[in-house]
Length: 114
Image (cartoon, rainbow, N blue to C red; front, side, top):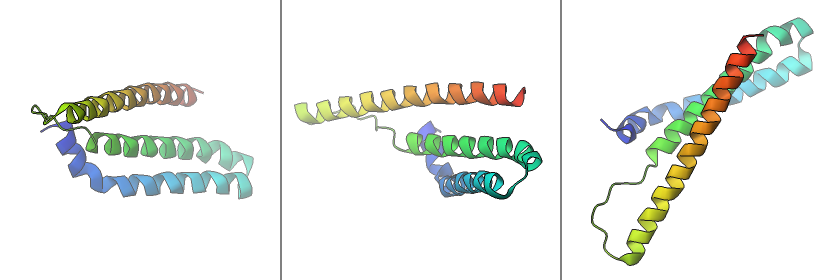
């Protein structure tokens, strides 16, 4: 099973993860508007981490579903150029995703060690 097939099976979770992200942001806004300082200290960090990780996982599923196919036979010069361009853009986005994931992991560890 490739990552693309796994992402296609997990694609049903993408709307759920997006909903969790929106609810996490909604909870943060409610805490800052109506919550006390003690409630903000207890729940804001957990809501922020839940929102960011759900958005990151949703982006991961969306990225892996759209991987370029492995065509070995190209029909022409322009088709080959399009395929190479799609693969290079995908690699660029995937590397940016890895950097953002590592930065989020570092920020999560730092925030939880407070």
